[in-house]
Amino acid sequence: MVDGLRAYGLIVAMWVRSTMAYRASFLMTALGNLAVTGLDFATIMLMFSHVTTLGGFTLPEVAFLYGTTSTAFGLADLAMGSMDRLGRRVRDGTLDTLLLRPVPVLAQVAADRFALRRLGRVTQGSLVLGWSLSRLDVDWTVLKVAMLPMMLLSGAAIFGAVFVAGAAFQFWAGDASEVQNSFTYGGNTLLQYPPSIFARDLVRGVTFIVPLAFVNWLPALRILGRADPLALPGWLDFASPLVAVVCCAVAGLAWRTGLRSYRSTGS
Image 1 (tube, one colour):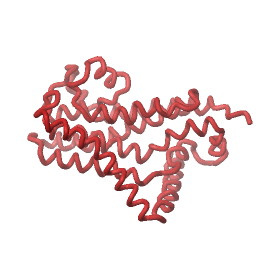
Image 2 (spheres, rainbow, N blue to C red):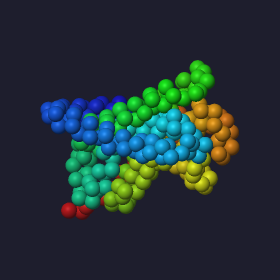
Image 3 (tube, rainbow, N blue to C red):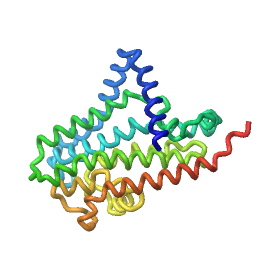
Image 4 (tube, helix red, strand yellow):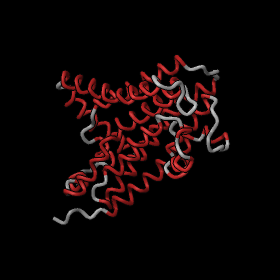
């Protein structure tokens, strides 16, 4: 793991140096990324120009959900967003080049073409989160304050695990980046809205099957003092770190299994 992290850091540093060689281009693309992701929240604000609550949640509360999941997803996308390129490498055989290097393949794939412009998504999510915190009527306790960084770090780890598991699936599917994106980008969009507006079967699915609800829904409901639509035990609101560890372990197992099954293109 130490070798993998070191290799990841070296590859990322290489791409960052390459990006910063054209600083004006980087600045424009980062601002463009910030503006594009900001349109998501603009859509939510347009909704609230016609209604006072959405599923019983006020605008600051929805902004809190938006900010927490967008920041967590942005961190995972920044670190692991290149995983969706694996399908193309499997299909055209260029993954063989990575296998020849004395560096963990996962580190190489994750750091490949590291896009510093993705900081725009993290920045935009953080700004919305900061705005929501200044507007929320919450009785902040030490526990609730501690839950906030826990949500962001655990959520980033859960999304990162989904990126890796989705990439592992492409060893068998050949190229299924859109399937992966439906759980990563699609999951991020889902979590921006209150769970109360979705069918209970969907909420159960993202709680027990693909546990995205632990990114922000469950801990956020605790912070906001909202009832859990599934009436789950209260201790699950604090289970995000444990879920993140389990997700990372499962994703690691899926990755190793997929990598062992790889047979190249044959030419």
